[in-house]
Length: 520
Picture 1: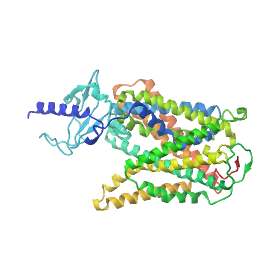
Picture 2 (picture 1 turned 90 degrees about the horizontal axis):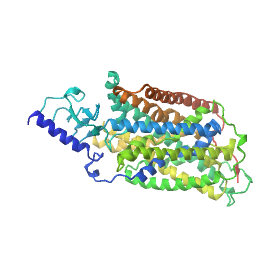
Picture 3 (picture 1 turned 60 degrees about the horizontal axis):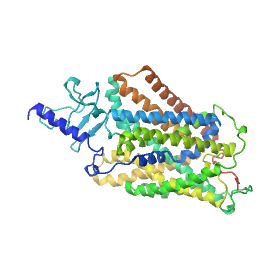
Picture 4 (picture 1 turned 120 degrees about the vertical axis):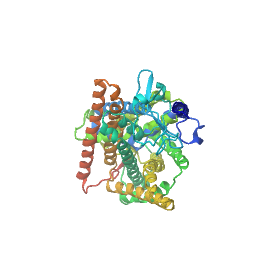
């Protein structure tokens, strides 16, 4: 077969492959994508974790005026960064066939794209050409020309790490191109830290709420409107409650089948939705005069607001998977804007109402402020059940990053024992970290400042510059991206410092935000 005929055949083969489903598995090609409504529900649910319950304390740390305004600005910036991530993922799409072939799409000119399209085996061409080093690049003038639509695929099979890696490969810097694989490693590191941080937050949340329910069980009544002060009966330390959850968490993380985990996800969704509705209707009642609350809080507590708020916008990791699974991905940008508008509105409403309702008495989780009656105690139990089920889903992400890498280094004989050992070690690590830092508000702020700010605010703007700089970017766009990344980095540094400083100041003082009295 002559080289021109071979190249033509390769081009036809590759274009057919690129038009297929984003799934790499042939068995999934016929799987129907999710609808617009389903994508919207998943996007909203991706933001509805424990973070929303801590936003009232976050508003207190910023002020009754500054808090809602800051949440609005942060929601707009977070949504914009998600759009950047989607646009960059659509710009660089990699497809890998079962035989190990790759197609890289780069560059564009007018309505056509100059595409480096090479069907490359691991070590050599599969059509009899000379040996080809996988990392070598061909010149653009030898590349075939394909329609520009290939540059904007409806369903690009890209994750966050892939997108960052390809963005660095497209940068004008030779050093960044040569070290592009570090982009994937950095994203994977922050994803692991973020997800394990979520797991630590969940353990502290579980312990705080269960401790409060148990301590108040002897005085819990059916009357939710009485103003009688109830003293809690002291029980064991919150750290012991955390350890008591460990056996259940170990059993949950040993479940390796994602289909089984979806059952727990459904149960978590139902219990958390019911709880959130009941909490919202309670905090919207009997709101006192807001004039006693400061419009702007001290600048020293604002970094804690930043960490908690950015922790709440935790769905950037699910943006690309949702777009990949949509039937018509062209609608995804609109769905993303609508979903984040709903989420931001909910955050502002619940955060503001909670602070207005409880004032300076607001606790790390608004569930800890609920009255001591069976209706609201059942809300805590429902949320405990929902968070317990969600733990396994949050744990699944770092497990799927770490475990395949580890077992690829050992023989098949040791694969399963190593898998189970890593899962056990990781869940014990999250429990240990929760025991060491048992203050829910500071754990949320620390996780948000350290990892969520990097994934949601710092990396996406830099990715946009790296991806599109060679094609020409306006100075205003570059300035905007630089400003967002700088703000994210400042929040990362100051928020982390403030959270650690608060932890050090705590010392041996009581660390449990739920060791208080009730008004029932």
